[in-house]
Structure formats: C-alpha cells, structure tokens
Length: 189
Image (tube, rainbow, N blue to C red; front, side, top):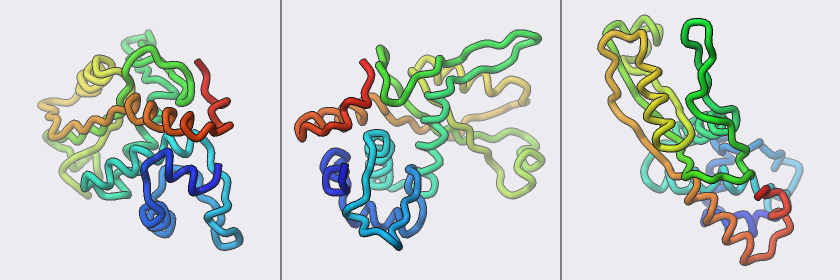
C-alpha cells in the first residue's frame, strides 16, 4: 500500500510519519527515502499494525524512542511467546501468536518499569530502574510480571503500561477493509 493509504488506515499524519522517519524511531523496517519519494514507498499491513500503536502512544505523551521499543519488544513477545525455565522444565507464560494471524483472545503489549535493592549492579549504575516488556492476554502478562520477580529480593513494579493491540489491530483491519486493500490477504483467520 502507498503512504496515503497507510496513513488512512492507521490514523496517522504525514508529519508524524516523517518526523519518526527522520529521527529513526519508527517501529517498522527503515526505508531508503533518500533515493525514493516517501509517498510512493510500499508499506505492508504489518507496518500498519505496528504504526497504529506508535501514533496512539506518542500522542499520549510517551517519547517516540520509548514507544518504538515498547512496540517492537511487546510484539516480539507476542510472536515468539514467553517461555522460562523452572528447574529442568520449560514453561509457557504466553503462547506464540502471529501478528496477522487469528487471535481468539484480547492481546496486549506491556512495558514494566521496576526496581529492587541493588538495581545499579543490574543496570551498570546507569539508572535506578529497569524495563521489561511483555505481550499476551492480561492474565498472561500478570503471570509474566510475577514470574519475572522471582529471584529478586523486594522487586517492585513502579509502572506497568498496557496497550490493547487487539483493538488497534481491529481498527487497522476495518479501515483496510473500507478501502478494499489487497494487503488484507495477508491476514489469517
């Protein structure tokens, strides 16, 4: 799809897209706009699903750099699932789900900011907090946050920011259907 269609289905503006591109903070694969006119670049439905939360969260006041890592890491957790080891067994905290696949549950991405005594040793003294990303259902995220606290004395969640990726994705798909975009063939289910 072209840039004008991308902006229509994501609710973004050209200024938001161009600004993110110039600062290299978009949560999509960079495109060479030095040799091509940005208006004629091809974008995928995946790009649109990644950009909708970017526009929503930056408008809500989060820094674009933080938003990009929030989206990229959260979507990575959704697509790969979250697994961890307990003793000699692997456990699944959230099942893998394709970004454009069928979702039977409401799926969220989350950014947890946390601290604990001695956090400076973990962060190399750079800051007094750390960030962990999660993805899945609300219950899966709650379990993942609790599981991540294991092994840390007095680990405290300072902030847990959630974004409803299912709702954003549904808005993108509905807008793409309204424009009869052929990229909808990428959607499974």
